[in-house]
Image (cartoon, rainbow, N blue to C red):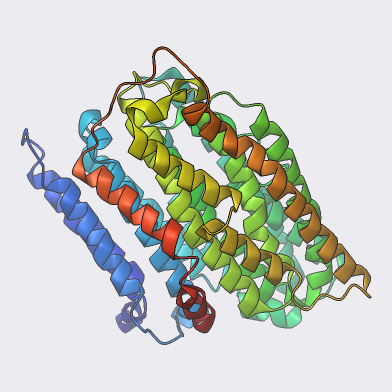
Length: 479
């Protein structure tokens, strides 16, 4: 084996170094009562990894094409690494109270490494290994609060669904291998023809990843898992793992099944309309905030995948990456505030608990409002710009004179209508905080410095990422 090939995997190598350092630090200080430096160490290491991912690395491949990388892949890795940095920041108090702080950082970093491998795969076997490297530790993270019954239930549903979806996906991959005798993306793309085995393999492969992204009708595990998992883990699931899976799906659809675009465009259009519409209808009915955010994430997944129905690779991948960046900022702001409230409210996360919240916690109420406005796509917040670019990417190259073009415009129009509907349920939270009266609002909370820093980073993203046009242009240039 030529070990110099590993030098081409700089983001993954730096993440392995982070894992080793965190493991040694946790092992050496295992008997220490106070480990105030462990969280700052984990945060600094993730921030350094983010910077490494942003280095101007040349597109390359390793191990005969099993590993590939490009500017677009490195930008998405940097975004996911930044999102994990925010997770580490806001999890400081909870991780210490759990008594398993070191394990949490190690498991989370392990899942991120799996996502990095999955996104850089040039071979279906490498892709599957990366996917499982991310999925198995995620099940441990969901069950981290083992003393809570719904945590164990959420973990059981997650691992059973993950196992089933992996089996479905492997079945689809085996069909592609039977048809073409290879699992290299480039080789399959060169030989691919729309026969029965190929179409069936595409459907099964898409179904498997649909479970990971929690698209309708593969979403049934989402609400129970999000509610049962620790709030910090729920935030990680809703943003980081979803972003990695969506990016990988788009990349494989374009680079492997590009010549069969008509087939998977129809499949995507149906799933997108179902995901956005069904999730919006169910979100309206929720009274528990984490279940509410679960259906919100299903709807947001539909918007993320909307970029894939365009015909231009650069526009689609840029819009998807930009959407994930904005989604990281807005969603992590919400889950950071939910985590603070949960830790100071006896573990309760009902929407009614936020009645009159602005009277005792005006700053947190304002930040929650801004995050909800961004998720809803209200201007001038960044969420509006991310939806705009996704809509534009969805109709890029489409003509209303053709059947597929007319369908693309129809799907974007339905998504636009659902954006208006989503305003209603996002504003439910704002209404609870500012309008609904109560004689016993939650007490005033004092957040630790790490939580304040996490919220500050998220607010910078919500307020500036949209109006700073250079952000999208930089992402588009990398694509």
